Image (cartoon, helix red, strand yellow):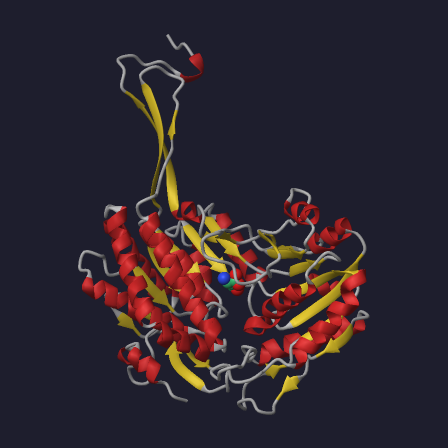
Length: 514
Ligand code: UN1
């Protein structure tokens, strides 16, 4: 495999005795003191990296360095903090192609989607730079004469970021770029499956740090460890905020640990995203949206489309169109042009997919196409599968679960109210969509009686959200919001201030205390 892009990113500087460093910031790059861990490419199973995992003691030392950096950074004016983020964004633009190649290598994502992921990082840099001049608070009318009230937003502290393999750069960037302009330090535990993505990012950040001596060098750091590190971060009261993306199981345990110390958590967990296709839909438009949302990233986005709820009058026609489209999908090496479906991340993911398909069939599901492993014309050693469509009843148990693989459940409905009920009747609440040309249906779907998800779309698919909106979902998705809109408020603490500029001391609520 041609790995020149790693050298172009400067990742060779982290190599030492064939082991990569596991704790890296602008001040130091240390090998881990824990167990040895290898990274593998989903493309062909080739080993890509070897590490000793970081230990909780190493995390502890990094936390202290991050606190010292935070204490300096919090008094740097926000627009100056924005200049650092702007420089990071410029470097991400410059190295966009190399960065995307690291994503493809470690996450198995096709190159156009990997480039899209780096673009999310670049976009959120632009957003954060603008925000660095707009961390606005309110002024509030005081009930007392000679008094003024206002809100200020202050930096929060070091923020722990825990992220998953499937978006190994973008999710960090939503948290880190916002957190930095908000005045926080960022300590990141990436997925152990994507350590090189994390080191590529830290290398870019370190370049910006080298050019900007006023920025404290430990303001951004990465610590590559296993679940023990995530647990240590979650229990550590020096982290006022833990932002975690991944499975609902992981999120519940992070939420419990952070909650036990009354810290804040920002959770972006599983989705079980559905699209309603009405009898009033443009079916060809719906078809294109379904294919991208269901098979893009080989079904490994938290926003991937898992369920299509089609009106009974259009379900059969839609099924035929989908089968036809799935037959022409090009599955294979994600580095190759025109390939649309890359590999699953690993063998466990393949086994989980097969188990889900088995359960679906036991519960009355009928496989319309796909599901099998592909071994021809694909790199050996990777787990490539044909994306699958299963015709199934809406009340089948398996439909309640998120399986992180390209399985699409197709079900039917009679009335729009019933469709919305089916759509909402799952534990998760991330993303949702309706395809309809009927204004009434679209507005009902977006109304308080409509979709209960954090993202609800009309005539576009469930995945591929822009960074400008707040991203996240309800119920078992965890309730957190990241990226755009006012998600920045998560990374700051609010201070309500009342100022008396008069000569008297009137009490609120008219209390007389004499
Ligand atoms: C994820 O899978 O964790 O909306 C994030 C999307 C992307 C982000 C997905 N912008 O599909």
